[in-house]
Image (tube, rainbow, N blue to C red):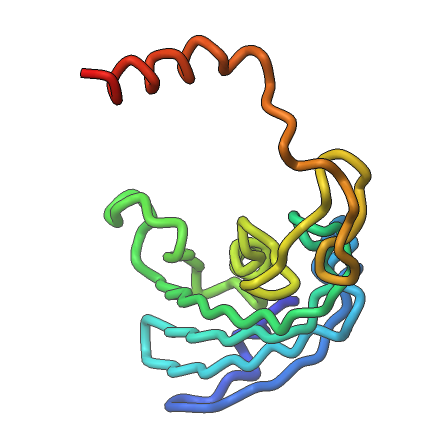
Length: 169
Protein backbone atom coordinates (compact mmCIF):
# COMPACT_ATOMS: atom_id res chain seq x y z
CA UNK A 1 0.00 0.00 0.00
CA UNK A 2 1.48 3.24 -1.09
CA UNK A 3 0.57 6.66 0.21
CA UNK A 4 0.64 9.29 -2.54
CA UNK A 5 2.09 12.33 -0.80
CA UNK A 6 1.09 14.84 -3.48
CA UNK A 7 -2.60 13.89 -3.25
CA UNK A 8 -2.79 14.41 0.54
CA UNK A 9 -4.42 17.62 1.69
CA UNK A 10 -3.11 19.73 4.56
CA UNK A 11 -4.75 18.88 7.88
CA UNK A 12 -6.61 15.78 9.03
CA UNK A 13 -8.14 13.10 6.83
CA UNK A 14 -9.25 9.49 7.17
CA UNK A 15 -8.66 6.85 4.49
CA UNK A 16 -10.09 3.32 4.53
CA UNK A 17 -8.81 0.37 2.55
CA UNK A 18 -9.66 -3.29 2.21
CA UNK A 19 -6.76 -5.58 1.40
CA UNK A 20 -6.06 -9.25 1.00
CA UNK A 21 -3.18 -11.31 2.30
CA UNK A 22 -1.50 -11.26 -1.13
CA UNK A 23 -1.67 -7.43 -1.22
CA UNK A 24 0.35 -7.33 2.03
CA UNK A 25 2.74 -10.16 1.04
CA UNK A 26 1.54 -12.36 3.92
CA UNK A 27 2.36 -16.05 3.61
CA UNK A 28 0.52 -17.21 6.75
CA UNK A 29 -2.71 -19.11 6.15
CA UNK A 30 -4.32 -17.26 9.06
CA UNK A 31 -5.36 -14.32 6.93
CA UNK A 32 -8.01 -15.57 4.48
CA UNK A 33 -10.61 -12.90 5.28
CA UNK A 34 -10.44 -9.33 3.98
CA UNK A 35 -8.16 -7.04 5.99
CA UNK A 36 -9.64 -3.64 6.83
CA UNK A 37 -7.14 -0.81 7.20
CA UNK A 38 -8.15 2.64 8.49
CA UNK A 39 -5.58 5.42 8.30
CA UNK A 40 -5.96 8.67 10.23
CA UNK A 41 -3.56 11.09 8.55
CA UNK A 42 -2.45 14.51 9.79
CA UNK A 43 -0.43 16.39 7.21
CA UNK A 44 1.73 19.32 8.23
CA UNK A 45 4.27 21.33 6.27
CA UNK A 46 7.28 19.03 6.95
CA UNK A 47 5.72 16.04 8.69
CA UNK A 48 2.89 13.59 8.09
CA UNK A 49 1.58 11.56 11.02
CA UNK A 50 -0.27 8.32 10.24
CA UNK A 51 -2.23 6.41 12.88
CA UNK A 52 -3.42 3.09 11.50
CA UNK A 53 -5.99 0.57 12.68
CA UNK A 54 -6.11 -2.94 11.23
CA UNK A 55 -8.87 -5.49 11.65
CA UNK A 56 -9.46 -8.95 10.20
CA UNK A 57 -10.79 -12.37 11.08
CA UNK A 58 -8.04 -14.99 11.37
CA UNK A 59 -8.42 -18.73 10.81
CA UNK A 60 -6.49 -20.31 13.68
CA UNK A 61 -5.86 -23.79 15.08
CA UNK A 62 -6.22 -24.32 18.82
CA UNK A 63 -2.92 -25.22 20.50
CA UNK A 64 -4.67 -27.59 22.95
CA UNK A 65 -7.34 -29.46 20.97
CA UNK A 66 -6.23 -28.75 17.35
CA UNK A 67 -9.73 -27.55 16.39
CA UNK A 68 -10.04 -24.83 13.79
CA UNK A 69 -11.65 -21.59 14.95
CA UNK A 70 -11.90 -17.95 13.91
CA UNK A 71 -10.82 -14.97 15.97
CA UNK A 72 -11.06 -11.25 15.29
CA UNK A 73 -7.64 -9.62 15.29
CA UNK A 74 -7.20 -5.89 15.85
CA UNK A 75 -3.98 -3.94 15.82
CA UNK A 76 -2.75 -0.39 15.55
CA UNK A 77 0.42 1.29 14.39
CA UNK A 78 1.88 4.76 14.07
CA UNK A 79 4.16 6.08 11.35
CA UNK A 80 5.70 9.52 10.99
CA UNK A 81 6.79 10.67 7.54
CA UNK A 82 9.33 13.45 7.89
CA UNK A 83 11.34 15.67 5.54
CA UNK A 84 14.12 15.96 8.15
CA UNK A 85 17.51 14.57 7.12
CA UNK A 86 17.60 10.86 8.12
CA UNK A 87 21.10 11.31 9.62
CA UNK A 88 19.76 13.89 12.07
CA UNK A 89 17.01 11.58 13.39
CA UNK A 90 17.22 8.72 15.83
CA UNK A 91 17.05 5.27 14.28
CA UNK A 92 13.34 4.67 14.73
CA UNK A 93 11.62 2.25 12.39
CA UNK A 94 8.37 4.19 12.73
CA UNK A 95 9.91 7.35 11.26
CA UNK A 96 10.31 7.37 7.49
CA UNK A 97 12.18 10.23 5.89
CA UNK A 98 11.31 11.54 2.44
CA UNK A 99 12.47 14.34 0.20
CA UNK A 100 10.42 17.01 -1.54
CA UNK A 101 10.75 14.96 -4.75
CA UNK A 102 9.21 11.83 -3.22
CA UNK A 103 5.80 11.14 -4.72
CA UNK A 104 4.75 8.09 -2.70
CA UNK A 105 5.77 6.07 0.37
CA UNK A 106 5.18 2.34 0.80
CA UNK A 107 3.80 1.42 4.25
CA UNK A 108 3.17 -2.30 3.60
CA UNK A 109 6.03 -3.43 5.91
CA UNK A 110 4.58 -1.53 8.88
CA UNK A 111 1.06 -2.84 8.23
CA UNK A 112 2.30 -6.42 7.79
CA UNK A 113 4.37 -6.26 11.02
CA UNK A 114 1.45 -4.89 13.05
CA UNK A 115 -0.86 -7.59 11.72
CA UNK A 116 1.56 -10.44 12.40
CA UNK A 117 2.16 -9.16 15.93
CA UNK A 118 -1.60 -9.22 16.60
CA UNK A 119 -1.70 -13.04 16.26
CA UNK A 120 -1.79 -14.45 19.81
CA UNK A 121 1.18 -16.55 20.95
CA UNK A 122 -1.15 -19.08 22.59
CA UNK A 123 -4.02 -19.79 20.22
CA UNK A 124 -6.99 -21.16 22.19
CA UNK A 125 -10.48 -21.85 20.85
CA UNK A 126 -11.74 -20.84 24.32
CA UNK A 127 -10.12 -20.25 27.71
CA UNK A 128 -11.64 -23.40 29.18
CA UNK A 129 -10.36 -25.70 26.39
CA UNK A 130 -9.54 -29.12 27.87
CA UNK A 131 -7.31 -30.24 24.99
CA UNK A 132 -6.63 -33.79 23.85
CA UNK A 133 -6.19 -36.96 25.91
CA UNK A 134 -2.45 -37.79 25.94
CA UNK A 135 -3.20 -41.51 25.55
CA UNK A 136 -6.04 -41.92 23.07
CA UNK A 137 -6.10 -38.47 21.48
CA UNK A 138 -9.80 -37.85 22.16
CA UNK A 139 -10.93 -34.23 22.16
CA UNK A 140 -11.87 -33.76 25.84
CA UNK A 141 -14.15 -30.82 24.95
CA UNK A 142 -16.42 -33.16 22.97
CA UNK A 143 -16.16 -36.51 24.72
CA UNK A 144 -14.92 -38.03 27.95
CA UNK A 145 -12.29 -40.65 27.24
CA UNK A 146 -12.17 -44.00 29.02
CA UNK A 147 -8.41 -44.09 29.51
CA UNK A 148 -6.93 -45.30 32.80
CA UNK A 149 -5.52 -42.21 34.50
CA UNK A 150 -4.19 -44.10 37.53
CA UNK A 151 -1.00 -45.13 35.72
CA UNK A 152 2.05 -43.50 37.29
CA UNK A 153 5.28 -43.29 35.35
CA UNK A 154 7.96 -45.39 37.08
CA UNK A 155 10.46 -42.56 36.73
CA UNK A 156 8.56 -40.68 39.48
CA UNK A 157 8.82 -43.51 42.05
CA UNK A 158 11.95 -42.12 43.80
CA UNK A 159 10.08 -38.86 44.44
CA UNK A 160 7.11 -40.78 45.85
CA UNK A 161 9.47 -42.48 48.33
CA UNK A 162 10.72 -39.09 49.46
CA UNK A 163 7.16 -38.00 50.12
CA UNK A 164 6.49 -41.11 52.25
CA UNK A 165 9.66 -40.47 54.31
CA UNK A 166 8.53 -36.91 55.05
CA UNK A 167 5.17 -38.12 56.43
CA UNK A 168 6.89 -40.56 58.83
CA UNK A 169 9.04 -37.87 60.52
